[in-house]
Image 1 (cartoon, rainbow, N blue to C red):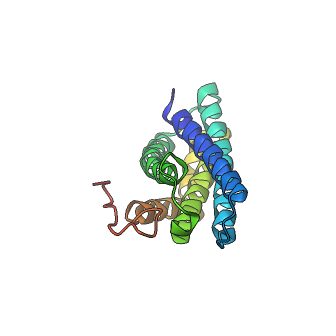
Image 2: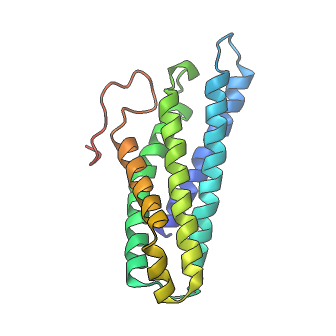
Length: 185
């Protein structure tokens, strides 16, 4: 299984787990005001499914070997997949903390963490879309020229910035006090 397929499968699992959490919350309304968090989780589940679609599409293009990648585009792709795998493992782990056996009250969820996870998934979805589109060009010279465009450079910086924010965040629960270090230590 490729790294993209692993990321995709984990995104799907997280989306399914969030859907179950939402259904469980709807069935156990206890008078709390969980509506805002449920809405944020719903958006996150949708974003996870979209992210999965984009990683699958990129993985299909790579598997089909439709065209050659320029060396720079290959380096961007390799770096992006590695960073995405690292940070998505953190996000999926955090989601698992609240959807797994040790369920927490929705009131304990940090809405800012959910917003950051959404931003992260959107950023990496955009990178996957870009790489898929540029990959489809086929000609290495065209691929190289697309990489030099300022919008693409900003796209890559945004993905890196969201990665850094998530990796240095304190976690999904409001009670989490210690930020993670960027290296995951």
